[in-house]
Length: 288
Image 1: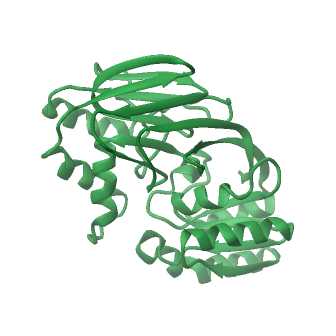
Image 2 (image 1 turned 60 degrees about the vertical axis):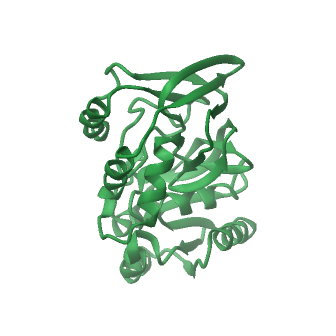
C-alpha cells in the first residue's frame, strides 16, 4: 500500500517538522511510495485520514498522541490502516506498541512490520487511544498545554507540581458496567493503553487488545505522600501503594462534585459527566 504521511508540523515544539526531511529520505531509501500532507488543525488531520482511507493508503500519523487519536478515529472497523511515526512530545502509543521515539527508525516498520488489531475507546463521540482522565489530571493537562517552556516530556511533571499547590479533593461517582463506586480523591482515569503523560505507566499491565478498559482511582492522601509516589508512575511501581485502585469494565460513566474537563491523548475531549466505551479490535495498525 502507498503511504499518506499526515504530519503535524507543530508537534513536539516543531520536532516533527525538523525531522520530516530525514523521514522522507528514509521512505525513499526503502522504496516506499508516499505523499506528504501537513495538518493545519485536528479536523484537517481527520479529513486527511478519511482521504487516505478512501484511497486505500496507509495513514501514517507523524506527530503526537493527539494526532494519532484523531487519525485513528477515521479508520475504524477495518476501513483503514494506521502507522505511527512518533514526532510529538509524549509518543505514548508508540511507546506501548514498542515502536520507539525515533520517526526515522520507525519507517522500517512500514516496509517490514506487521498488522495488528488494537482496541480504542470512545467518549463524547471522540475516539482516543491512550488514557482519558479527569480531576487533578485536568489541571495538570491545562498547565502543561499552556506552558511555552522547552521541557519536552517533563512538561507533565512540571504541570503536576504546579497543580498540586492549589488542589482540593473531589468527590467522585463512577459506574462500571452498571456497578456504582464512590470515593474522595484526585482523579479518575479510564485507560485503553495504560500509558500517558510522556511515559507515565499508570496501568503498566494494561492490554491494548483485550476488549476491556482499566479504570484507575487515585484516592485522597496527603499531598506530600502523593508527590512522593508521582515519580514511581514513570516506572509503574506505584500500583501497590495505598490510595491507588484499578477496576475493569467495558463501559464507564463518571462525574465529580465540581466541573472538570476530561483529557485524552493530551487534548480536551469531554466535559463531565462522561461515558466511555471500549471499541474492541477496531483499529488496524502497523507494528514491529
